[in-house]
Length: 573
Image (cartoon, rainbow, N blue to C red):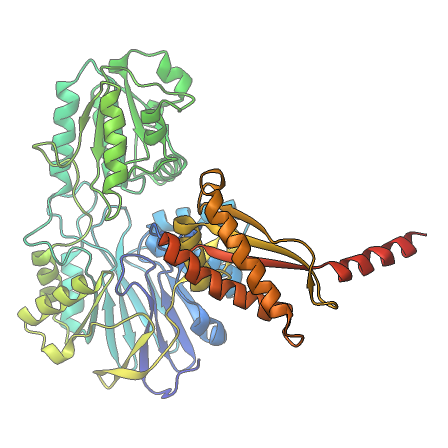
């Protein structure tokens, strides 16, 4: 849809509200659109067969000629993962990203054979200027290098988006630029769009330096053991410290997991990680003493195909567990992954190894890259906004963040807890919620199919996974309105045919009766007969079994098939 009221500046949210993931929103003034982030989310268990979930790009397609740039805050998947799909759909004149994110994006595009020549790096000194937008950047602290917030000056007021952030006063990487934040705040900020992921957590998040201290203690204590560490591949500062610790303890590093390998290589090239001479391959690692090796791998969330899961299963082709190995989970469970992680840990214990996790260790083996309650307050105090729109979080997180803003002096009516697809309008420094909205639904990626899989298909997949499928095959002569042989009943995932012969016989008899009854009505088409089979069988089966399989009637008009076959024979002669 096209938005009216061209003199107002619009803030249009396409993803990232009521969810943790697929962050994407844009600012529009007259004939200019600036897009901020283009992320994905990963499917939860009920989205069977789905690879990724994307924001709905309908609004951008319809207003493509207005798009001036896509600006990326940092390089996590929920902020850059949708870019290859976006570029297949829409022409983007330029993409601006901090260096680490730029390299990750370039690698993504290369993997998908997408050529794009307008990808540029920015830093905290970069300024972009368009007809209606002036854009500056400020450095933040997050679990990936080169994370930034964005300051956007528009004809109707200023907007600041924090991106993902925390305040860490003893960080591994550079400090967040508090001075620039305060300076931008003094200029006057109308709307603050701020990360809400950890709004429910009180106090201040633990410093990354505490995690480093805990990991160092493990290295100091287990000097003769091989150490295996599973962590997030994108947590570059964690990886940097592990590399530094291995250097001090004279250990080589073997890396498993494609995303881990990519992130480390990009970080070495970008100067974020030193000591590239420490990295060795699996064959070299297997020929060194245990005390000389550290293994870095993916799989901290129990992903079944990740390196650590295959190591725990004993199916990894290059690495086998040893009884004196030390396995460290330097991560916290993402919601929904606790069971998978627990299974992996149990398998590791069965192998006899010692396992450290954040919940079982007295020390901090992981800290979040997102701000807790007191840090959110600090961000609000630094920018002193008139209005606040919580972003990036479930509804309860957004609501809590809005309450935090109210505690910091923002009037309740100046906080906006909105949904994907909704729009804020800014005119003369006054912001209101628009009555207009744009499509904000989830778009599913299934293999090479984007947007072709809808809620109906997902529902059918759920039914098949839970209750199976039942196929009724009937051979009929439509012209004579005659059923030629009894229907054939086939099932998959519904019941075991050999153990339920009586039920199958009953379904066969009922199917035959339904078909014969409908054939007596010469006006009914085969499609109408199919509908009747489905409606009557599903009622009967649910009453008998309590289950509702997908019922697929297949009606073969034998007379038509015979005519087709005769035609083929004539043609061949």
